[in-house]
Length: 481
Image (cartoon, rainbow, N blue to C red):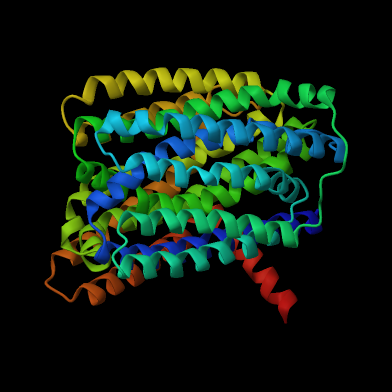
């Protein structure tokens, strides 16, 4: 049991280190590019990225998760999915290439046609990477992701900054994304030993697709819904409005994405191995929700409290309009662990049918809220996103009341101590922002004081997530000695 926990924690650390390293580089690049590029450049690339993101859902087709979830997946399964993906990605790219002029006309931006066609090459490249990613996740070899992601991110950072400096504008962002995907894929192929065999089975694909198509439909709904605000904002409002909205989402998403993607990547294969033991899955789900919230809550609260100072310091005053959106998304993402853990439990139990039904209900609710606010203002759309997030976590947790005997009220009880402590920390450090201090000094004081308050508070009220994490740290230190 101890060895198993160590393996899980070790893979989480590698995945987390990969995410943090990549996002740290991206953040530095953002700081530099924000000084060379205009908000309109970011707005333009955001419109194109919406369509690429949606197509990348089709690239997976749910088959990647199916390979991870299947008990006895072998080379025939992996090879069949690999060859299917190659053909499928080529078809998707041809469709994107053909419809690029339509997208350009719809938004009234002539240069979008070429940008869409060039950036769409990432769809072809992703087809080569998808099965390798599934192999790494299934076998919990997350160390491989670390080197692949960091290699692509560093190279893309240098290319993007250089092109922005020499005045390439939006093409600096295009080249950055294209290079990142290509290099990430190349390194993964070099470091991962799996290679497709000369075998193919339509029958195996049918079995995998029977599970995966529901996740595909769910992922498609989720992706379209998550990006529909960008489509609406880009059409009803300005490219700058879209840039401010997306930038406000980006910073908290970087933090939450690092933690959430790390947990998500490790959680599904771990739960899938225990899919016949409901009690064990409940325990893993509960621990995941508590520990993730304990880590995320103070980070989101701290980011919301220091938002004004942080944005001026790292992005300059021209980006101040994004502060409002940043604060809204910080509160929304604070509850992300409930979404992640509940959905992974449902997938691990093989209930992709339930997963799809949940996505449909959440999107119906979300679209109703969006349609009722999109004509008012971009700010009203942000508020609707927050309300939608609260309702979505209730919907996601509902099936596990029966499947795991773990209700939403129980989950709230598990996370309330961390949430309240994070709020208390935020209240304590907020008055410091009213002082007329140097931005760097102000942030330093708030971060140090906030961390101290949260850690000391954890010890005083005896939050078990802190004790659990501290126990792991002590055991690692003991072994290292």
